[in-house]
Structures are given as C-alpha cells and as structure tokens.
Length: 201
Image 1 (cartoon, rainbow, N blue to C red):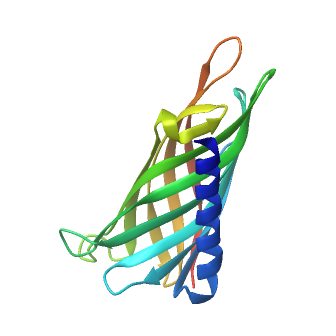
Image 2: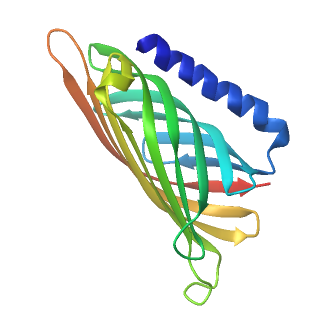
C-alpha cells in the first residue's frame, strides 16, 4: 500500500508538470502567520465540462509545540454547482513531510480525499470582488504511510481582490495528524491564522 501511495503521488506530480505549458489560468499565493509561512501555485485548465485544477503548495510551522513541514500536490475536477458563482471541486491530494516534537522526529506521507468550494459574493453585497472558500482533506488509515496514521485538514478564508489580478487572502486552517510511534502513538493538532497575497495571471 505504501508503494501504491508513493506511485500515485509521483503520478500527480507528473500530471501537474505536464499541464504547466497548457494551463490557461495560474494562481500563486504567499501567506504568513505568527509562526507559519505557506506558499503555492495552482494551474487551472478549462475542459468541455468544468475544469481541472492541479497544483502544489508547502507549509512550514515552528511553534512552542514543535515544528512541521508539509509539501502537497493536488488534482481536482470542478464545475459551477447549484447557484451562480458557486464552484465545487473533488479530487485527491498527496502529502509528504516531517514533524518534530521534542525528541520525536516523524516522517509524514499520505493520500487524501479533497473537497473544495468557492463562492464569489455578489457585488450588491460587497462592491469589491470577494471570494470565500473552504476546503477539507481527509486521509483514512489505509491511505497513510511512513509514520502517519491519519490526517485531517480544514481550511477556510476569503480572497479580497484589491485589483483585478491580485487579492489579499485571509485564511484559517486546522490540522489534526495522528502519528504512529514507539513506545506509543501521539497526535499533533494545530490552528493557524494567516494573511497574504494571491496573484492571478
């Protein structure tokens, strides 16, 4: 199972690389919090029905309870759903990284199911282009490898476009990671608030 998960992450990376020259829309962001820095890039390809989003991102956090670093690659398929301005996406995310906690040093790896929603608020509510978003990633035990046993992440926030192709991004993220260790398992939870810039080109 570990080999299969690793191959799927490599497969995701290959898809992302192969789509770079064909992507019609790019998004890049850089966010920072009290003890966190996060950056990433997404590429969006329009399809006959909906779109495909591929991308990668990384996060590094260093706080009193230890530090961790995670790199992820993701692929989702999306479309407008239910009402105008609301996009829904389903896909998978491959994660790899490490976490340090005192004398404990664990390696992380998993494949996660990913659900994402984005809604552009009507201009009559807010005159500035504003998009609110939420994202959930979940890894059940059989899809985790290395020292990771389970992974759960929820992210929500808002992009406020000051100009047409640049926005201020405000976000909140919650992480819950279950780690297998000797002599006993342990877990890491974190709540992160960040602010940053998102660019579209």
